[in-house]
Length: 173
Image 1 (cartoon, rainbow, N blue to C red):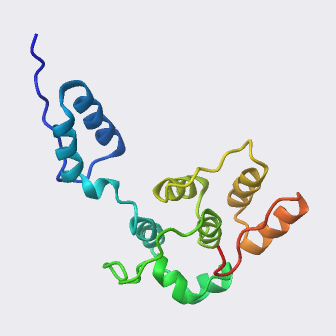
Image 2 (image 1 turned 180 degrees about the horizontal axis):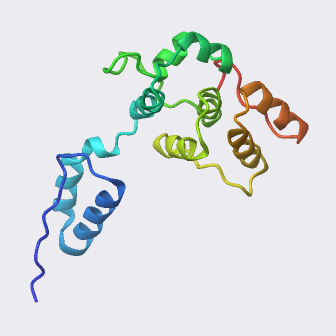
Image 3 (image 1 turned 120 degrees about the vertical axis):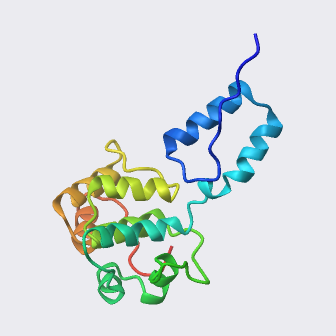
């Protein structure tokens, strides 16, 4: 019995569910050449960077605000120039971007921007970093801090009090 080929999306932005569905259909119905073609057409679907910075910007704009780089720098200890390499100030990505800010830096930025737990988990997914996991003492402290709306400094004090590593403060990695 011949299997019917199902149409694939590839040129448009796909949800994760659609992307997984297309991969599954190709595994079932397609061959390696079709998969390679799909991967070429869908190249943008796998590019998380600079979407990480764009995601940060979009969350703030959704709330009706703009990112105040001076304030964010003060709250995180990360220089404004480094923040501009992570988060696009304009709609176009900057000419130079940091390939991958550390998980701790992303968490510090999420705390400073008062992200919810869900927003932070999504940010970590975008950055291809592990989501916060309640069975990890460090991650549990971050979940607690996010729920409370704690600052980076308050979170570092909490982490120190429970004997965990501090969030990176500054441009160190």
